[in-house]
Image (cartoon, rainbow, N blue to C red; front, side):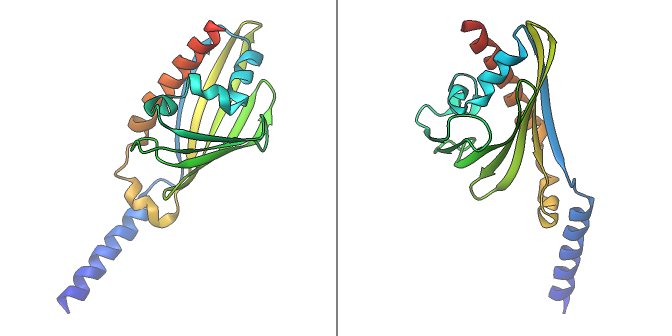
Length: 173
């Protein structure tokens, strides 16, 4: 009888945590670059360009990448990695506004999905602001666990590094 009561209390506590958990998790970083909106867009629109600036691709020199499509809506890439911070997954571009916006659906094997987006705001002919964002809407029963994960601390520095690397890559061209 006591065991059933304890199990009931634990389940109720977890469901309360789920109800209190974030329905939407958003992390983003922004950087001003001395590059045109068009050149930044061209750097992002082809997944093959990401090898020079994505911090996750640089973590594992043995990562296996597969590309489908050339660029734009419908183009995709999948990856396989033994590195714990990279893992396996795929991404596909689902929405594109040339020189302004790119939306990507992400699937992390065994962990579910999320989205990433890039907003490019032209400040002048040779200056733009790039915002790289991550959005996840965890299912209700996962929200309790999400309370113990600090996405800002995990992803924020990686996005900052990626934007710095992208800026360097564009400057080298």
